[in-house]
Image (cartoon, rainbow, N blue to C red):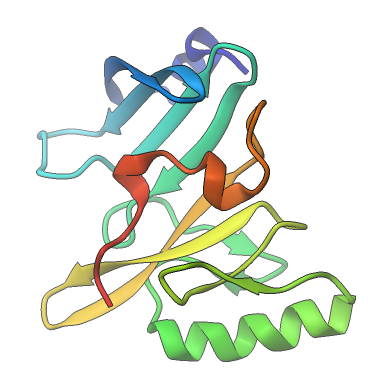
Length: 151
């Protein structure tokens, strides 16, 4: 998917586009906002020159709910989500890994879990991603802006 197709797929959203250079090549970041512009966008999408759309990040508080076979990914208590996710991946025989930040994820599902502050707690914020050209892992492919520093 390219930027134009993503804009068409998000009717009713305003979008802002920024192009940056990374070690993996030029990257376009598109932030989608509905209604009054908030501090954070509801959805952020990243596009690479070679890959097209390679990363989608729904906001944990304001973004659309994202599910994986009924397992809600965003807006959850991280420890409760992790328990359910570990059971889910074990039941399917797919790989589980932990990011350098200590959050569960799966290369098989293209998922790197992050967290985001909400009032007095941290809640889950999924980063849905594919391995970019010239990268080895999902973590290597993740846009720098999406790496959570909260613990």
